[in-house]
Length: 245
Image (cartoon, rainbow, N blue to C red; front, side, top):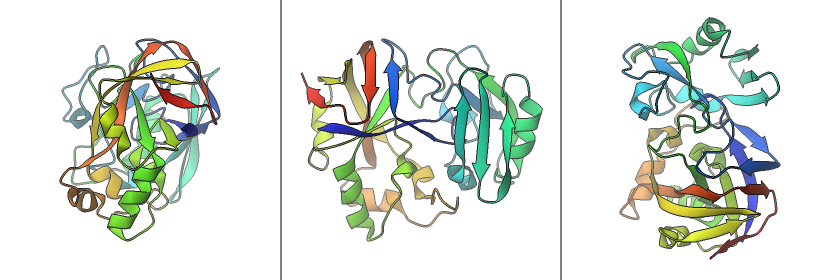
């Protein structure tokens, strides 16, 4: 098995960025992954601790967000966001939050709570789990969902950090509780990923077009991918081997 894609999402649910290599640190999530999040005006979250997804503007509530791509300048922590229906924007979330909020508001579902504040959570980010996690997705499982859905699907719908091939479809669910080596990183597989309506949106258009949850339900679950915690610091690059320990 080997790594075939690496992704980070600097602002939770607001853009994805492909990487060629990354250093993962023990006890932390992927660097700059979901480092920022946009809280809506009904949120009960604050910027000092982790909070659950329902506190933020996310793709399951506003599918147009799923078509955003991002480029992060790490040295300045400035992000360029792109969407097929909007002009590009380059913004520093820490100092230009109103500029960022102004850009994303037109992409939010007007019937939902609206983007209101930009939060930042150092070291672990606003991952979808209460623990600092990285997510792994199996190419063969993705192909299996395409077969069930009878349609091609962009892998980016699943918003995974690390993609790998060389395993059988759904084999990854048997790894829960085990450890693995990927590059020079050591991971512990913690749990399956429960999926939501965000995955029903086309990541090129931001429109819902395929009922991925219905497809998964044919297997009597709505899981895709696995969460892992980093238990030994190291580097991961495209093409690195993945092996269970």
